[in-house]
Image (tube, rainbow, N blue to C red; front, top):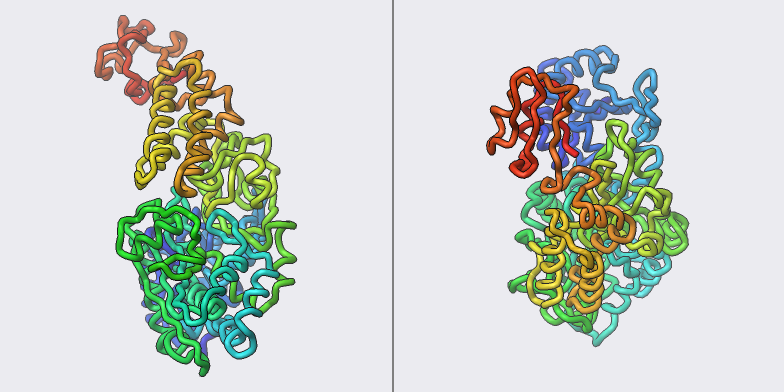
Length: 599
């Protein structure tokens, strides 16, 4: 009889840190110690706390182990599984505010988890995503059974409308309204259900983690959506760079077909539905719904003018609904628990929770899910553990290349659709990048705009040419060649692009530039007028200087300088000729006395 379950994270992050080898070693050690009939090792999806992976949790006591290695396995088996004594050096027991519990604590008692509410991520880190029976044990497919046997398509749409669920892909369009549009039309019209799993924002991995940890939730929700609008065919468009997600989704689809949950006459009804996976090649523009549809059809991924919208004329010219992974992950729970339950969570106009990929200058990088309306400060300090090395929080970027930077003065802003839009940012799909005092905001704007320029499909002139012109101005500014009027030129270009670009990606591309000008204009002015980068990031504006009080006159920096810009006499302070210095930083790396600074 199984008395103990050892859950080992099998998400991409932990897999890259050798969690499959840890799982294999654990199974081998358990077998060797004669515990195979009592202890079961379970591969799960992402637990969320990626900064501390590989993660292992042992139940029923719930001991949370972090940064486990293969070498730790024999000790865990010997001490914990045989003797009942947790291995204290591996236990994660941070209860928040830098406080440590005396012994092991449960998952929900840790600082990282206790202010989260995991709805879309409810099964991630809990079940084996490759075993359909484990999903069914968590009420999986009960929602699909309910809608097929107890509800009409209209009742399903009304319930989703009443819940207030909005699309989690970025724009926040009401999900039920989208379904309602697609449900209309002539009887017998061919319709499609599409899942957008092509998240391309730098640092974003929300959808990937759901597909890796709970793929059946997406399959079930797509079937519910198909029943609601009268579709019998669905596609999941997922980028090929997600091999674990693709593998587990493929396994889940095959299992659902085997159990009669996809295919013909599902749950003994006349409802038929099946799903096909389409792999994307990693084009950022294919995250835009019309470009995604064009790609599924076998054409170059480029956006189409709207209207008509996909709900009226989408895939292969037929009515189509497109929702992203996180949106679908909420549907089964809304069906089972009701619209009132879901709408009671979150803020007035933004219902439910939101998943964020928390990264950048933050102690606890990883995946978090919080109720809509949670203050940004709570996410950064209470959940994320604050800024490393005692640095000051400077800004947070939400919405990826389409979003904006939120300054420290607005750190208590509620994270919901309306509040973020009001301050010049946006929810986006859920990337949240934290920056500290060492980040240059002009350089940050240049980074995101560089990404957008590289990823532009080139179909429309405002995006293709306008963003490139903006990038050229930013490059001039960070190279020390900025001119008076450059800020105004950036603003004018940005407003034109926002008003005239063909698709949502082009229209939102200027947001990082506009928000950094709005909140950090003084940094732009320092770059342009003083030829100075306040954060000392922009290399061509750097000035390397030798402190004569600290210089020992050893000549090491002079001998290493590739252009001979450093001169002096032995045992006397050396100096740097600023007209020759190429700002390479070799001198700082060479000096053993800390005499050289970058200003």
